[in-house]
Length: 373
Image (cartoon, rainbow, N blue to C red; front, side, top):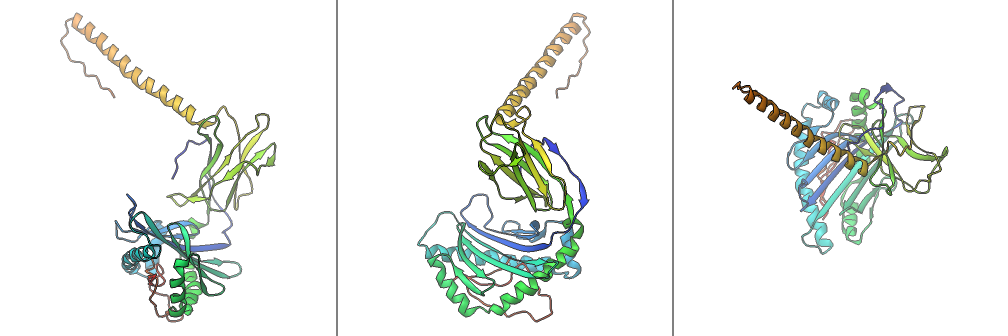
Protein backbone atom coordinates (compact mmCIF):
# COMPACT_ATOMS: atom_id res chain seq x y z
CA UNK A 1 0.00 0.00 0.00
CA UNK A 2 2.44 2.63 1.18
CA UNK A 3 5.87 2.97 -0.37
CA UNK A 4 8.28 4.63 2.08
CA UNK A 5 12.04 5.12 2.12
CA UNK A 6 13.61 2.64 4.52
CA UNK A 7 16.07 3.49 7.23
CA UNK A 8 16.47 -0.14 8.15
CA UNK A 9 15.95 -2.87 5.58
CA UNK A 10 15.80 -6.59 6.19
CA UNK A 11 14.22 -9.09 3.81
CA UNK A 12 15.01 -12.60 5.02
CA UNK A 13 12.96 -15.75 4.32
CA UNK A 14 13.36 -18.34 7.07
CA UNK A 15 11.18 -21.08 8.44
CA UNK A 16 9.27 -20.38 11.63
CA UNK A 17 6.70 -22.07 13.80
CA UNK A 18 3.33 -22.18 12.05
CA UNK A 19 0.68 -20.03 13.75
CA UNK A 20 -1.61 -22.09 15.98
CA UNK A 21 -4.93 -20.39 15.16
CA UNK A 22 -5.82 -20.17 11.47
CA UNK A 23 -8.66 -18.28 9.82
CA UNK A 24 -10.64 -18.31 6.57
CA UNK A 25 -12.66 -15.16 6.07
CA UNK A 26 -14.73 -13.48 3.37
CA UNK A 27 -15.64 -9.82 3.14
CA UNK A 28 -18.42 -8.57 0.84
CA UNK A 29 -19.02 -4.87 0.26
CA UNK A 30 -21.90 -3.40 -1.74
CA UNK A 31 -21.74 0.32 -2.42
CA UNK A 32 -24.09 2.97 -3.72
CA UNK A 33 -22.94 6.18 -5.44
CA UNK A 34 -19.29 5.90 -4.39
CA UNK A 35 -17.16 7.28 -7.26
CA UNK A 36 -14.47 4.98 -8.70
CA UNK A 37 -15.50 2.12 -6.41
CA UNK A 38 -17.20 -1.09 -7.63
CA UNK A 39 -20.84 -1.62 -6.76
CA UNK A 40 -19.90 -5.01 -5.34
CA UNK A 41 -16.58 -6.33 -4.05
CA UNK A 42 -15.73 -9.71 -2.53
CA UNK A 43 -12.35 -10.68 -1.09
CA UNK A 44 -11.33 -13.93 0.63
CA UNK A 45 -8.50 -14.26 3.17
CA UNK A 46 -6.54 -17.10 4.76
CA UNK A 47 -4.65 -16.06 7.90
CA UNK A 48 -5.12 -12.46 6.76
CA UNK A 49 -3.59 -13.10 3.32
CA UNK A 50 -5.87 -12.22 0.36
CA UNK A 51 -6.62 -15.35 -1.68
CA UNK A 52 -9.61 -14.48 -3.91
CA UNK A 53 -11.03 -11.33 -5.48
CA UNK A 54 -14.24 -10.44 -7.32
CA UNK A 55 -15.65 -7.05 -8.27
CA UNK A 56 -18.64 -5.92 -10.30
CA UNK A 57 -16.41 -4.36 -12.96
CA UNK A 58 -14.44 -7.50 -13.85
CA UNK A 59 -17.33 -9.87 -13.03
CA UNK A 60 -14.81 -12.64 -12.48
CA UNK A 61 -13.63 -14.44 -9.35
CA UNK A 62 -9.85 -14.83 -9.51
CA UNK A 63 -7.02 -16.07 -7.25
CA UNK A 64 -4.72 -13.57 -5.54
CA UNK A 65 -1.94 -16.12 -4.88
CA UNK A 66 -0.61 -18.73 -7.30
CA UNK A 67 -1.06 -21.59 -4.84
CA UNK A 68 -4.78 -20.88 -4.49
CA UNK A 69 -5.25 -22.38 -7.97
CA UNK A 70 -4.41 -25.79 -6.52
CA UNK A 71 -8.02 -25.95 -5.37
CA UNK A 72 -8.95 -27.00 -8.91
CA UNK A 73 -7.25 -30.33 -8.28
CA UNK A 74 -10.14 -31.09 -5.89
CA UNK A 75 -12.77 -29.03 -7.70
CA UNK A 76 -12.07 -28.31 -11.44
CA UNK A 77 -15.23 -26.20 -11.79
CA UNK A 78 -14.55 -24.02 -8.73
CA UNK A 79 -13.77 -20.68 -10.43
CA UNK A 80 -16.65 -20.77 -12.91
CA UNK A 81 -19.22 -21.84 -10.34
CA UNK A 82 -18.18 -19.40 -7.64
CA UNK A 83 -18.02 -16.57 -10.19
CA UNK A 84 -21.69 -17.24 -10.84
CA UNK A 85 -22.35 -17.15 -7.10
CA UNK A 86 -20.63 -13.76 -6.86
CA UNK A 87 -22.73 -12.40 -9.73
CA UNK A 88 -25.87 -13.44 -7.86
CA UNK A 89 -24.49 -11.83 -4.69
CA UNK A 90 -23.95 -8.61 -6.59
CA UNK A 91 -27.67 -8.26 -7.26
CA UNK A 92 -28.74 -9.44 -3.83
CA UNK A 93 -26.50 -6.97 -2.00
CA UNK A 94 -27.78 -4.12 -4.17
CA UNK A 95 -31.29 -5.04 -3.05
CA UNK A 96 -30.12 -5.17 0.57
CA UNK A 97 -28.90 -1.56 0.38
CA UNK A 98 -32.28 -0.47 -0.96
CA UNK A 99 -34.13 -2.38 1.76
CA UNK A 100 -32.07 -0.97 4.63
CA UNK A 101 -32.16 2.47 3.01
CA UNK A 102 -35.94 2.41 3.23
CA UNK A 103 -35.87 1.27 6.85
CA UNK A 104 -33.74 4.29 7.76
CA UNK A 105 -36.06 6.55 5.71
CA UNK A 106 -33.16 7.56 3.50
CA UNK A 107 -33.16 8.42 -0.16
CA UNK A 108 -30.09 8.77 -2.33
CA UNK A 109 -26.66 9.57 -0.97
CA UNK A 110 -23.59 7.40 -0.46
CA UNK A 111 -24.21 4.06 1.27
CA UNK A 112 -22.53 0.69 1.88
CA UNK A 113 -23.67 -2.72 3.02
CA UNK A 114 -20.99 -5.06 4.32
CA UNK A 115 -20.85 -8.69 5.35
CA UNK A 116 -17.88 -10.35 7.06
CA UNK A 117 -17.99 -14.05 7.84
CA UNK A 118 -15.58 -16.90 8.32
CA UNK A 119 -14.17 -19.52 10.62
CA UNK A 120 -11.12 -20.26 12.73
CA UNK A 121 -9.34 -23.53 13.47
CA UNK A 122 -6.83 -24.30 16.21
CA UNK A 123 -4.34 -26.78 14.74
CA UNK A 124 -3.30 -27.98 18.21
CA UNK A 125 -6.63 -28.44 19.95
CA UNK A 126 -8.79 -28.94 16.86
CA UNK A 127 -11.34 -26.39 18.16
CA UNK A 128 -13.27 -24.34 15.60
CA UNK A 129 -14.95 -20.97 15.80
CA UNK A 130 -17.17 -18.98 13.46
CA UNK A 131 -18.50 -15.47 12.94
CA UNK A 132 -20.75 -13.47 10.70
CA UNK A 133 -21.42 -9.72 10.91
CA UNK A 134 -23.55 -7.38 8.84
CA UNK A 135 -22.90 -3.63 8.71
CA UNK A 136 -24.65 -0.68 7.09
CA UNK A 137 -22.69 2.50 6.35
CA UNK A 138 -19.84 1.13 8.44
CA UNK A 139 -21.94 0.61 11.59
CA UNK A 140 -22.96 -2.74 13.13
CA UNK A 141 -26.34 -3.92 11.91
CA UNK A 142 -26.65 -7.67 12.62
CA UNK A 143 -24.39 -10.35 14.06
CA UNK A 144 -24.64 -14.11 14.48
CA UNK A 145 -24.00 -15.36 18.01
CA UNK A 146 -21.99 -18.50 17.30
CA UNK A 147 -22.36 -19.83 20.86
CA UNK A 148 -26.07 -19.17 21.44
CA UNK A 149 -27.13 -19.59 17.80
CA UNK A 150 -29.20 -16.45 17.62
CA UNK A 151 -29.09 -13.17 15.75
CA UNK A 152 -28.15 -9.95 17.53
CA UNK A 153 -29.71 -6.74 16.19
CA UNK A 154 -27.65 -3.60 16.77
CA UNK A 155 -30.23 -1.23 15.29
CA UNK A 156 -34.03 -1.12 15.62
CA UNK A 157 -34.15 -1.31 11.83
CA UNK A 158 -32.48 -4.75 12.02
CA UNK A 159 -35.15 -6.33 14.23
CA UNK A 160 -37.35 -7.27 11.27
CA UNK A 161 -34.54 -9.28 9.71
CA UNK A 162 -33.52 -10.81 13.06
CA UNK A 163 -37.02 -12.20 13.66
CA UNK A 164 -37.46 -13.47 10.09
CA UNK A 165 -34.10 -15.19 10.01
CA UNK A 166 -34.61 -16.84 13.40
CA UNK A 167 -38.02 -18.11 12.28
CA UNK A 168 -37.25 -19.06 8.68
CA UNK A 169 -33.58 -20.02 8.50
CA UNK A 170 -32.26 -23.36 9.64
CA UNK A 171 -29.47 -22.98 12.18
CA UNK A 172 -28.46 -26.56 11.48
CA UNK A 173 -27.07 -25.37 8.15
CA UNK A 174 -25.14 -22.57 9.89
CA UNK A 175 -23.73 -25.08 12.36
CA UNK A 176 -22.67 -27.38 9.55
CA UNK A 177 -21.08 -24.55 7.58
CA UNK A 178 -19.08 -23.04 10.46
CA UNK A 179 -18.04 -26.33 12.05
CA UNK A 180 -17.47 -28.49 8.95
CA UNK A 181 -17.61 -26.80 5.53
CA UNK A 182 -15.58 -23.71 6.32
CA UNK A 183 -12.88 -25.49 8.41
CA UNK A 184 -12.48 -28.12 5.66
CA UNK A 185 -11.82 -25.44 3.05
CA UNK A 186 -9.48 -23.67 5.46
CA UNK A 187 -7.43 -26.84 5.94
CA UNK A 188 -7.33 -27.37 2.18
CA UNK A 189 -5.95 -23.86 1.62
CA UNK A 190 -3.44 -24.31 4.45
CA UNK A 191 -2.17 -27.48 2.80
CA UNK A 192 -2.01 -25.94 -0.68
CA UNK A 193 -0.24 -22.80 0.53
CA UNK A 194 1.94 -24.32 3.23
CA UNK A 195 5.25 -22.96 1.94
CA UNK A 196 3.82 -19.47 1.55
CA UNK A 197 1.85 -19.40 4.79
CA UNK A 198 4.59 -20.77 7.04
CA UNK A 199 7.35 -18.46 5.83
CA UNK A 200 8.79 -15.57 7.84
CA UNK A 201 9.57 -12.21 6.26
CA UNK A 202 11.14 -9.44 8.32
CA UNK A 203 10.00 -5.85 7.73
CA UNK A 204 11.35 -2.65 6.29
CA UNK A 205 11.27 -0.02 9.04
CA UNK A 206 11.04 3.72 8.44
CA UNK A 207 10.98 6.72 10.78
CA UNK A 208 8.87 9.52 9.36
CA UNK A 209 7.62 12.96 10.40
CA UNK A 210 5.40 15.33 8.41
CA UNK A 211 6.64 18.51 10.09
CA UNK A 212 9.11 19.30 12.86
CA UNK A 213 6.22 19.63 15.34
CA UNK A 214 4.31 16.55 14.10
CA UNK A 215 4.34 13.10 15.76
CA UNK A 216 7.17 10.78 14.79
CA UNK A 217 5.87 7.71 12.97
CA UNK A 218 7.59 4.34 13.01
CA UNK A 219 6.30 2.41 10.02
CA UNK A 220 6.92 -1.32 9.47
CA UNK A 221 5.91 -2.90 6.18
CA UNK A 222 6.47 -6.07 4.20
CA UNK A 223 6.45 -8.47 7.16
CA UNK A 224 4.87 -11.90 7.60
CA UNK A 225 3.15 -13.46 9.52
CA UNK A 226 0.64 -10.93 10.74
CA UNK A 227 1.34 -11.54 14.44
CA UNK A 228 3.65 -8.66 15.25
CA UNK A 229 4.10 -5.94 17.86
CA UNK A 230 5.40 -2.44 17.15
CA UNK A 231 6.06 -0.03 20.01
CA UNK A 232 8.27 2.82 21.26
CA UNK A 233 10.81 2.74 24.08
CA UNK A 234 12.06 5.70 26.10
CA UNK A 235 15.38 5.20 27.89
CA UNK A 236 14.89 1.44 27.61
CA UNK A 237 11.29 1.41 28.93
CA UNK A 238 8.18 0.80 26.86
CA UNK A 239 6.14 3.96 26.32
CA UNK A 240 2.34 3.76 26.58
CA UNK A 241 1.19 7.36 27.07
CA UNK A 242 1.48 9.55 24.03
CA UNK A 243 1.81 6.62 21.61
CA UNK A 244 -0.88 5.66 19.10
CA UNK A 245 -0.63 2.30 17.33
CA UNK A 246 -2.54 1.74 14.10
CA UNK A 247 -4.28 -1.44 13.05
CA UNK A 248 -2.21 -3.99 11.14
CA UNK A 249 -3.17 -3.82 7.46
CA UNK A 250 -2.52 -6.18 4.52
CA UNK A 251 -0.30 -5.29 1.57
CA UNK A 252 -1.11 -6.36 -1.98
CA UNK A 253 1.66 -9.00 -1.96
CA UNK A 254 0.38 -10.96 1.05
CA UNK A 255 2.57 -9.20 3.63
CA UNK A 256 1.46 -6.69 6.28
CA UNK A 257 2.14 -3.20 7.54
CA UNK A 258 1.65 -1.35 10.82
CA UNK A 259 2.58 2.04 12.26
CA UNK A 260 3.09 3.53 15.74
CA UNK A 261 3.03 7.30 16.31
CA UNK A 262 5.10 8.98 19.04
CA UNK A 263 3.21 12.20 19.79
CA UNK A 264 5.73 13.98 21.99
CA UNK A 265 9.44 13.30 22.49
CA UNK A 266 11.61 14.52 25.37
CA UNK A 267 14.75 16.01 23.73
CA UNK A 268 16.90 14.74 26.61
CA UNK A 269 15.64 11.14 26.38
CA UNK A 270 16.72 8.27 24.14
CA UNK A 271 13.93 6.78 22.02
CA UNK A 272 13.81 3.54 20.06
CA UNK A 273 11.22 1.95 17.82
CA UNK A 274 10.96 -1.79 18.51
CA UNK A 275 9.44 -4.43 16.24
CA UNK A 276 8.72 -7.98 17.40
CA UNK A 277 7.57 -10.72 15.00
CA UNK A 278 6.02 -14.06 15.96
CA UNK A 279 8.54 -16.88 15.63
CA UNK A 280 11.56 -14.55 15.54
CA UNK A 281 13.53 -14.41 18.82
CA UNK A 282 15.38 -11.14 18.22
CA UNK A 283 13.80 -7.68 18.20
CA UNK A 284 14.41 -5.21 15.40
CA UNK A 285 15.34 -1.87 16.96
CA UNK A 286 15.67 1.51 15.23
CA UNK A 287 16.97 4.44 17.34
CA UNK A 288 15.29 7.82 16.86
CA UNK A 289 17.89 10.05 15.21
CA UNK A 290 16.57 13.42 14.04
CA UNK A 291 19.55 13.78 11.70
CA UNK A 292 18.27 10.97 9.50
CA UNK A 293 14.54 11.29 10.24
CA UNK A 294 12.52 11.53 7.03
CA UNK A 295 10.18 14.52 7.10
CA UNK A 296 8.10 16.49 4.63
CA UNK A 297 10.41 19.46 5.16
CA UNK A 298 13.47 17.39 4.33
CA UNK A 299 11.75 15.72 1.40
CA UNK A 300 10.59 19.10 0.07
CA UNK A 301 14.12 20.49 0.40
CA UNK A 302 15.45 17.46 -1.49
CA UNK A 303 12.80 17.96 -4.18
CA UNK A 304 13.82 21.62 -4.53
CA UNK A 305 17.46 20.54 -4.86
CA UNK A 306 16.54 17.97 -7.51
CA UNK A 307 14.45 20.52 -9.37
CA UNK A 308 17.28 23.04 -9.36
CA UNK A 309 19.66 20.34 -10.54
CA UNK A 310 17.21 19.24 -13.23
CA UNK A 311 17.13 22.83 -14.55
CA UNK A 312 20.86 23.50 -14.16
CA UNK A 313 22.08 20.38 -15.98
CA UNK A 314 20.13 20.94 -19.24
CA UNK A 315 21.10 24.62 -19.08
CA UNK A 316 24.79 23.72 -18.77
CA UNK A 317 24.41 21.29 -21.66
CA UNK A 318 22.71 23.97 -23.73
CA UNK A 319 25.53 26.45 -23.02
CA UNK A 320 28.08 23.83 -23.98
CA UNK A 321 26.20 23.14 -27.20
CA UNK A 322 26.16 26.85 -28.05
CA UNK A 323 29.91 27.14 -27.42
CA UNK A 324 30.63 24.08 -29.53
CA UNK A 325 28.40 25.41 -32.29
CA UNK A 326 30.22 28.74 -32.23
CA UNK A 327 33.58 27.04 -32.50
CA UNK A 328 32.38 24.83 -35.33
CA UNK A 329 30.97 27.85 -37.13
CA UNK A 330 34.19 29.75 -36.58
CA UNK A 331 36.19 26.91 -38.06
CA UNK A 332 33.71 26.81 -40.96
CA UNK A 333 33.20 23.10 -40.60
CA UNK A 334 29.63 22.77 -41.67
CA UNK A 335 28.89 19.45 -39.99
CA UNK A 336 25.89 18.63 -37.83
CA UNK A 337 26.74 17.38 -34.36
CA UNK A 338 23.76 15.46 -32.91
CA UNK A 339 23.07 16.27 -29.26
CA UNK A 340 20.72 14.05 -27.21
CA UNK A 341 19.10 15.39 -24.09
CA UNK A 342 17.95 13.20 -22.18
CA UNK A 343 -19.22 -14.22 -2.28
CA UNK A 344 -22.60 -15.35 -0.40
CA UNK A 345 -25.66 -14.24 -1.92
CA UNK A 346 -27.61 -13.75 1.29
CA UNK A 347 -30.62 -11.63 0.90
CA UNK A 348 -31.93 -10.95 4.24
CA UNK A 349 -34.70 -13.97 3.70
CA UNK A 350 -34.42 -17.30 1.86
CA UNK A 351 -33.27 -20.67 2.94
CA UNK A 352 -30.99 -23.40 1.66
CA UNK A 353 -31.06 -27.07 2.42
CA UNK A 354 -28.13 -28.24 4.49
CA UNK A 355 -25.49 -30.10 2.48
CA UNK A 356 -25.26 -33.83 2.83
CA UNK A 357 -22.97 -35.00 5.57
CA UNK A 358 -19.39 -35.95 4.66
CA UNK A 359 -19.69 -34.32 1.21
CA UNK A 360 -17.60 -31.24 0.49
CA UNK A 361 -20.08 -28.50 -0.56
CA UNK A 362 -19.94 -27.07 -4.05
CA UNK A 363 -19.19 -23.55 -2.88
CA UNK A 364 -17.53 -21.89 0.08
CA UNK A 365 -17.63 -18.33 -1.24
CA UNK A 366 -21.24 -17.97 -0.16
CA UNK A 367 -22.86 -20.07 2.50
CA UNK A 368 -26.43 -19.07 1.73
CA UNK A 369 -28.49 -16.70 -0.38
CA UNK A 370 -30.73 -14.75 1.93
CA UNK A 371 -32.14 -11.25 1.36
CA UNK A 372 -32.43 -8.82 4.25
CA UNK A 373 -36.10 -8.14 3.88
